[in-house]
Length: 66
Image 1 (cartoon, rainbow, N blue to C red):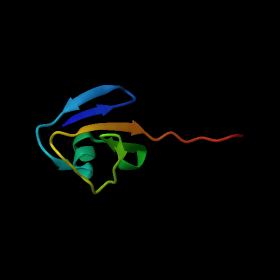
Image 2: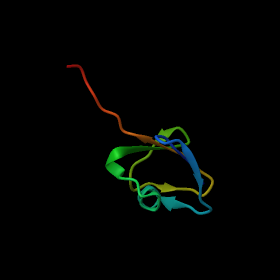
Image 3: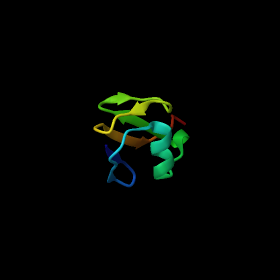
């Protein structure tokens, strides 16, 4: 599994399938602060990611007009 993280940008690789929850735990990333995208699709926290997946983890950014 290839995992691309943003802010700061880095790439991490894993040799096994795992859930999104396990992946975020291993990376020590707060699930409420990120979006997990697998092969172009937003995936939920309980989804299982295959070993050959390409995953992107993006920080959630919120804001609005004053």
